[in-house]
Amino acid sequence: MNYETAKQLLDKYDQGHLLKFYDELTETERSELLKQIGSIDFSLLENLDAEKRLAANRGKIEPIEAVTIDDIARNSEDYLNTGISAIKAGKVAAVLLAGGQGTRLGFDKPKGMFNIGVTKELYIFECLINNLMKVVELTDTWIPLVIMTSEKNNEDTVNFLKEHNYFGYNSEYVSFFIQDMAPSVDFSGKILMESKSRISSSPNGNGGWFSSLVRSGIFDKLTSQGVEWLNVFAVDNVLQKIADPMFIGAVICTGNDSGGKVVAKADPYERVGAMCLEDEKPSIVEYYELTDEMANQRMADGELAYKFGVILNYLFRTDKLVEINKQKMPVHIVDKKIPCINENGELITPKAPNGCKFETLILDMIHMNDSCIPYEVIRSKEFAPVKNAEGVDSVESARALLEENGVEL
Ligand code: UTP
Image (cartoon, rainbow, N blue to C red; front, side, top):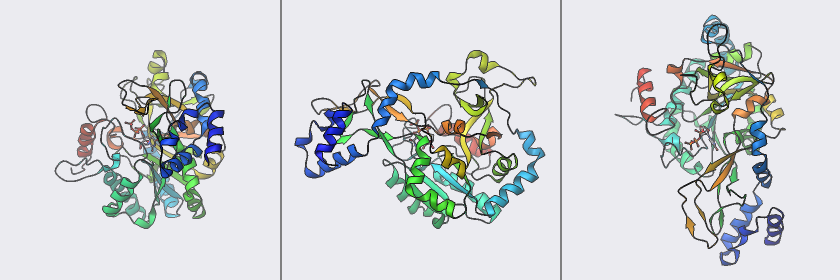
């Protein structure tokens, strides 16, 4: 993109200030800025007005039926055999979402590089790979492991895993792709700049994983190798089972297009999204969207109606993902403190939110599927998220759960 085209484009979207310091920049800085301008998805800015409409636009929310722990125990042989066969036939790949910034943990490296060990080194990435290795050993099959990073943490992540020899995983089965970035704006919709030559941007949310995977060429490679199912999971749950044959088998045997691992919520107000039906299609209702009445609603058997909290471990059918990718994903707007330069080019570090970021979320993909089965897992065995440095869902609580499950720290 040259200066003239960039200027025209920016004038069209009322963002001309991005070129304010252009004359002061070096040749390299100029071409980097023009390149960055060329990569902005300006259609995101339209969502600033649409935000309220989006929130109000929920359909009719109702409880959904799940495959419960008891159902799983009853059908375990069928589920396990079906899952193992799918893995052995090369139909399953695992996708690790590791593009987040992990701000709540306050660790300045990619979250997967955090050492959760106490008397020895045990990194979050290592925990996840150890969990996946159990399935590799059970099925005697290497499962492709695809890792999504962001522009901000890609180099650190790739180097770290290489240095640690992929914690014993076969490197031929490991690949990486980088998720797209989205610009940050102030409250009047003007794009912020982190310096005179760089636009302020951040990873575009975990919902961007599929379009970025397709763009990387890895999706086509996987499907041409015969992969039919993708198990997508978060970086921070150190206890989760990955490519869990029982889960895969349950989704296949029940004829669903997708599945989501869920846990019984700790209490009606726990801050997790719950699987539900929305206008008779699978969906996820956020904890802040539940009214008091809904949060406490009970089924005939006395159980909470919205009791199944999602843990960001999903199984998707690849052909269905291709269909979904033709639709536009809802864009969420989140208020944040965004360091940026002011009109004089001086860097400011805000103490209160001064703008917003755009994110798409993987949980919205559930509603884009025609069918999704909530698959209940035992909380104390499969859910140990490392979100915060202390307190709930913290390093401390995850360590306790790892120890409870026999993992040496
Ligand atoms: P979180 O919602 O916990 O966000 O991500 P985060 O960025 O990791 O952490 P905080 O909120 O700043 O503390 C859930 C999962 O989605 C991934 C994360 O890496 C994590 O596995 N994710 C999130 C991405 O891959 N990309 C994103 O843009 C955001």
